[in-house]
Picture 1: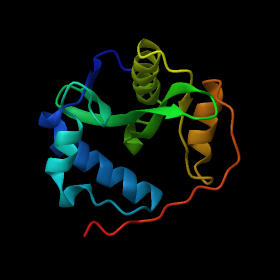
Picture 2 (picture 1 turned 180 degrees about the vertical axis):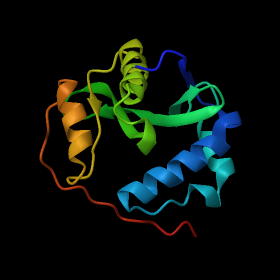
Picture 3 (picture 1 turned 60 degrees about the vertical axis):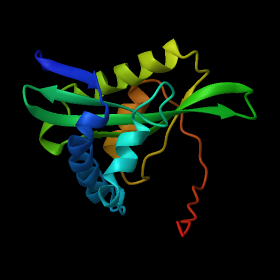
Length: 154
């Protein structure tokens, strides 16, 4: 565990850091990353009384080591609010040193403070290290297919 690690809530001032980390995360998962095309949308999503997006960044001094982002949502089947963890990413050289756990604790505490009934997320099937980490947290896998239908913004 890294002693001087600070996990703090990200706002619009941290958009540049989130864009860099997000691009690394997308490359790791072989996904497209379009956030840099509209950084003002990301900045706006992090602000306000009820932001669309919540995010936390793990920093060691001036170096960002990883981030976690989430949204608050509502489950029809559970009849309750839940937190959807959109991303949890730790830079390769910092994995296995407690950074992911510290980020997880921040998002978990947030979910509890907002009286969420559950936290839900997904990870690629091939990311066995992430799956092992999540199982150690006590999470259960739910086999489903995930679909994505890109929409033309025009």
